[in-house]
Length: 526
Ligand code: ZN
Image (spheres, rainbow, N blue to C red):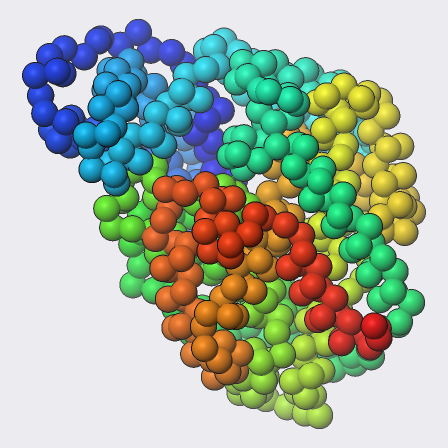
């Protein structure tokens, strides 16, 4: 998911005028007025997103300075519109009369009031301090990572941790200050619940990785060499179209870091990266971002120009991208269909290669030090390392000075690897320099939700694997649309998972998926 402007992180309290004569107007007219106001905020929000998309795809380098001003101005306007006292008054009055509203409108009021309350909880000067510290920290982090020297970044990280703790106090929490930060990305989730889930996941995944490492790797000589970028591009467009991505309501462009973004359900963009050396990289990026994009193209018509037109959490958004990328794109039925298709794009390059060979190649498991290069078996372990350190930093059990040592010890414990330097260790990710504590766990939750939802989809969609093997993805997309996409933010992530699968979010389905897939691929035996 794209790093977009965070609508909860900026705030300036506006001394707006109180709303007059509301009681005289019917609830229906007030809902119309609410929708009008939200439409304006949403338009500015989406204009910001469009400028950000342009910045990463088309903008010439010299445009950066002006773009910075444009983004800052529009973000401030959006924030002023959204935190206006008149909007708060209208929301509270409608909320008090929720039982007399249409249930769909009542939900709109409830979710928007939740956003409004969070957006107005942080004092203006605190928000400015955080923004200034974050941009300083980002600059220092870039330099520290280049020099592979954590000591350079340590004072900035220390400040950001203090500010995050203060932010948690402003938001309020019951058990852990970390919960207040997590809430921003995964509403309703807590550190205690994550500890429970990850406590089951980590030792099981770690043990599976050790068995795979001992089993040895397949030989893949055909995969080396250069792969034409324009053929990779054409192939990725073909797969996106097959998935059901609507090119009349979207487009694909090239960027250094792939992302997807939405200006409306009818204008949802994806980007992909291209590398001559990495055959599968562009395809998997396109399928991942395509999964996010199909979600955004599938939100309900009635929710356009409101903030219900979104996922309930980053974890749920990520479940959609990972499902398409991993459960579908890294399956054997998928390669039974697409290896013959790929032969047409790269004549002669797959002579003697079977769908089983392609399936093995795209599912290689190789413990590595870098999270963004991790495979399905090791990815969550990278996330759990960061989660455990974040919680300890925010709760105070770990000092900032101790981060590199603690990081390296956990990488050794979970992945069996030695960290040679900070650039390959605790300085590799951008997130902490943004002060985004609580973000990492959503990646792992995305994997867990994806597996649990996919398990149910397999029971409910007749001959699902046959459909994949024919590249007939319509039944898959229809199931996702009906069960997930259309609800937007009307249900929380754990409510959606429970309603669809009959169970609370749990690691069982993901562990069973890994064991069955990689047990067979690596001949691990029972
Ligand atoms: Zn994603």
